Length: 215
Image (cartoon, rainbow, N blue to C red; front, side):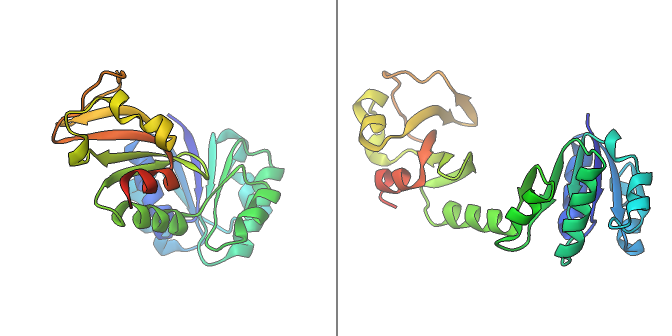
């Protein structure tokens, strides 16, 4: 269980609070808007109304005692930047700040953020890749190039073994697991034979996935 300081209880901040609460973390929610704070009372451990750009207010929260500080202020990048900078100056252990536009990430990182999330862009990319092909069932981005993809087994692959398909040599893709009826089997060998109704967990670049599955 982590102790979390969540600054900004707009739509994204509120959803983040819900998820953190469901995971069992202690969450202190902060917002300058009283209505937002009142709406979040049931999903956070504690909540306060206040201006996070006010150094005295922020210091009163005991920033150093939190394992993670999230800055999810919406529609006010200057306040987000100032809050991030103050948290770093006060010795926050780990700061995750939200970017809303291209170009904001570099400024947040320069001013104290350890990580930056860009939910609109990340969800848009996920939706573009996920729904642009019926072959892709899900995917998780690992870095700028590589992701884990869950893909349905093409009809032409049914009955063939991993070594026969040889996707590692042909497409630079690695089959990590085979999923069948909800069960994930990570013990994939060259002799593993693919069956109808199964899906694969594949590690690689999107361009390789496109080439392999003719997307």
